[in-house]
Length: 130
Image 1 (cartoon, rainbow, N blue to C red):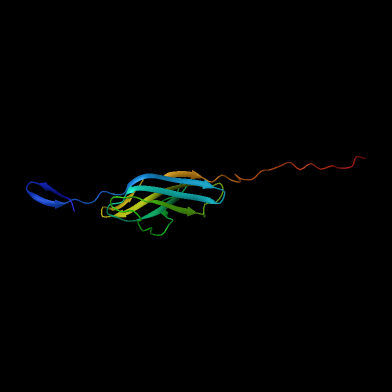
Image 2 (image 1 turned 90 degrees about the vertical axis):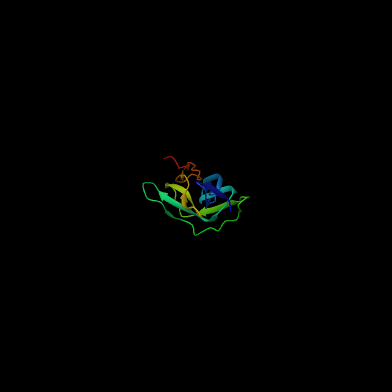
């Protein structure tokens, strides 16, 4: 473990949090896929995905997700939210648990459009004329 010297005393330095490369939320017809990638995960115990519906508070959406990376290598993660309904707007954020405590990363906001994958065609009726 790295040590630093301050006024002649030695104190351990806490590992830095995960190096987050990307955090995305991708909506489709049946929900939202939340993906993130890390470059390294020193001192990380795990992650959790939180969601806030428009105007609401953030709440845990996923269970605890154990880290797959190491102090010198990262990993790619994916979580699926199938509970968001058409027309709803939600913000997602990543919570990181580690040696440094609980860290909330910046949120991303998505909207699941109402009936975004439906095609409506006109119905033409032929009637008999009198």
